[in-house]
Image 1 (spheres, rainbow, N blue to C red):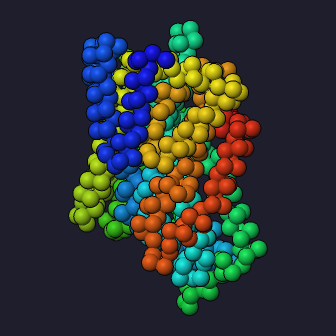
Image 2: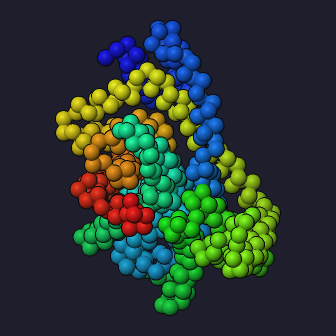
Image 3: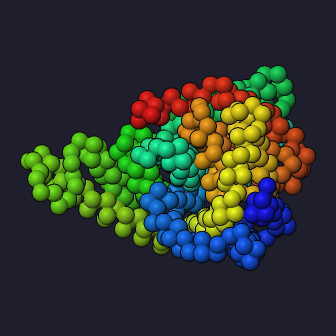
Length: 526
């Protein structure tokens, strides 16, 4: 190992040490990288002119159309959090299943899955679920350990359930790594993977996890009924068909929003960024509808118009400024312009309603804060990756993984273990931006490693580390909003069965990669 590679190792160690000491991530990545770049330059092992590529890389990040989906998905999640749709959904689902033993826990798992798909941010989902569901479950006699484990596990589904923000950034980084790996292998017309591929690949594993959670809750209700008692019906509460209708009314809004966002991507009608815009507007419209149903009729018309535009886009070519267009395309274009006008008017009405009730400013501020944090980390990680490669760190990683016993399997397992442990001290965005660009090109050059399968394995692995005692971030989020009677021990013990389910799912994905690759192959032929 040369002196440059020693510096690369020391740079990684310095970053990990400073992060564990509590220093800001983005500033730590950038500061340590600049310090080691200067040291390497004076030691004669790094040309500081390499840093001249940084502005171009930052400009590439800022103009990346895929990453434009991040603020839109974040806006969608924060707006839904403010709309209080989750509270209404949990209340109605609890009434539907609560009279069964274990029914409230099943309701929490279903609502958690819907919120994970709608919000896409683990911290926000955990806080929302913790504030809403934990007091309710404890008040009705649920075992504190089972209640805490259920909430923590379902909240982390936001890491893997499309359209998770994590999958957006992971898809972008894996695509870059996949193309780098192909170029290094002599393929000068590299193919690519998209965020839509990862979304499609994550659907089956995510739904499998939800099903396993529910099976575990049913088993607990049968084998240990005292842990999840039935809830007596409230006097005067709707029953029978009236209750089913209430549940349908509560579920239709979030379900339609999820279907619109995912469906437009999977059907090829919209890119992830375009579907994120649909989701952001849908969340805005649902909030406006909940605030003032009487004045939000143009908003509902706008939602219908969006669906019509998506369908029309699939049936006709509605692009402007075309030299030649048939009569059918001209009619479609005229209809599309009318629909866009209706959407614009509905958007103005929705913005006005949400702004007048003081919601828009708070949502915009939180969205800006989260988005700025993500992109600042990405810029710091870009500088870190640049210096690390300048010191020869990527070649060192390639040799280290290639020389591991077990070949490709040993290399993938080693990376998974490293990412799992890093999940205790680093945020998932930090891991994706720092670790994936270093290790993914090496793994994707090895025989038999599918990029979609690798991405889903990474996502499920990071989801598991996020909820694994003693340092899983989800556990700390939950502890911060837990009622006084719920202790840290309850949370740690309660999450263990769900961690076992996660590890079992990882094992199944290892031996049955088709769970992650079959749907993308069927939809996109890859």
